[in-house]
Length: 445
Image 1 (cartoon, helix red, strand yellow):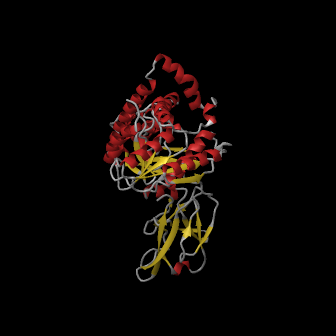
Image 2 (cartoon, helix red, strand yellow):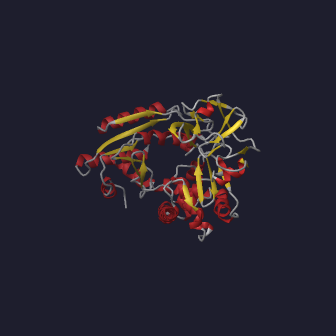
Image 3 (cartoon, one colour):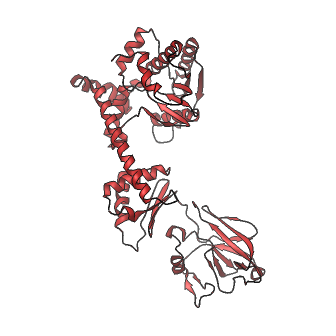
């Protein structure tokens, strides 16, 4: 089916509540075709939503200013409003110039996509084929092989790719017939970039044997997208079955009878849903086995960039990476004021009659907040003997990752309270006196 502006209408008209169409406009062939076709539809009355264009100036090419001027001239001739954003590309990120430019571009576009907006990108079937091949060569699963979806949430609106069913030669034919002029990015000829190498050297060779390559690979991407959607729906069902009121906690025993593959699928989806980077396949495999197979008295944990996961008793806990706390640290504390704790968290206190730490017992000296160094003992109020702090923390169900971070309150050199969990013998407020009721909010709580 050849490309015409009218072929864009059916999928676009199915998207509900569209207030404005915003074309990501580079001035190249693909976005030139998309913007011109949409404006013709608006002029004919077939498309009613507002239309404008966004140009991202990366500042990387010596021709970048010329491209920006071309975009401005085209939009002026089409009578389409144009917005330009200059972005700073982090060339020192270690991710490569192509990925860094893409991140900067998408971040800027996301900020400008408001409720009711559809950001339209001009990716076509050949782009889709390149993306699928790149993901295949990276060892990606169904989510990666789904490549670029037609529609997905983006910013506060939607991102739509209405040209995915059309090949580049079809767009070129229409642009030539319509007399369009566009810019060429000379960096697209640099074969040291993986995508360009595929486009210029590999795909032409494959097309000699399989002429319909772009169409068939796009179909494969759609099928992988369907498989990915099924996996997401299965993961959502499993998460719901194991969920708690806290989104970063799961009841792991509910999933004990599931296969390792299914657990891995759940973990990937849960971690992503909580906004953390998904660990690599090796770590996911280890999670899906170790966190279920470990003995009941073990507390397996795994850390990766930006996050960590722990199993404790009946639950899995997901959290940002916790910074280390210096066990030698000593902090003076006035209970009248909340104390911000190192590595996050807060210790506060409120006066209440007959509860908490006895105010009168604390008048003779300052309070010092310290942290575990090992070997501490505490004599809890109302109990006969002193016990090791390690045993008491286990008894009070303090999770292992918090035990080195729990604030220990000292009066002089005597341990008088363990956060808001334990008050030492001789320091509890009597019913007829005022006390400090402690409140500890752990980091990431």
